[in-house]
Length: 115
Length: 114
Image: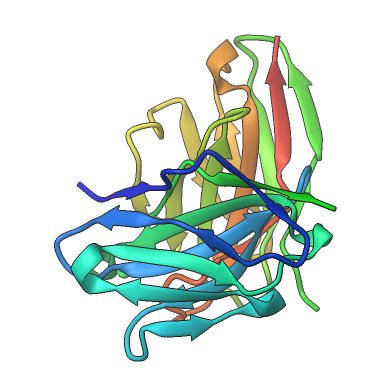
């Protein structure tokens, strides 16, 4: 069965520092891969997605993610974190064999940003 | 910018009562989804809906749950007899044909079952 693991429950970084949020997935082939952000009391906003092609994908708000097939990973990065980036981040996978109807989310990583 | 809307934002109900959560997807979208997030836990897939039928559902989506697109614009989730453990945030999402499952989420409805 598909699964998504986000090993870090929470991470604290200083404003202006770089950020990397880890995501590992378990799936027989390359799934559709997503990162979503959820601010307190808000819905989920798509940051970026990977389906195929270039393994480094750019998203909104200065985020990028790199798909590494050998490591079954899709880590999210940002070179310089802003205080407004404090939120919960979810990695998710969709099964291309089913048209991606079912999306499986990781448990999330809560990002804290300190001044 | 078009967005998914959900009503109500917060619903309080007594155990055993029926609730209907409503969603208005983005107008040209054809795929619709419901997810739930129990407080402090991960977002869980409930069901996907396309072409007026369920495409896929999770083990959570048992006979107590149903979905409907009653009028071509709304997309509803009904829980027939709520249980305490149904208390959660329920998110609706919609997507377009050929979007590889890119989904646009609504702000959620917080359901509290007493």
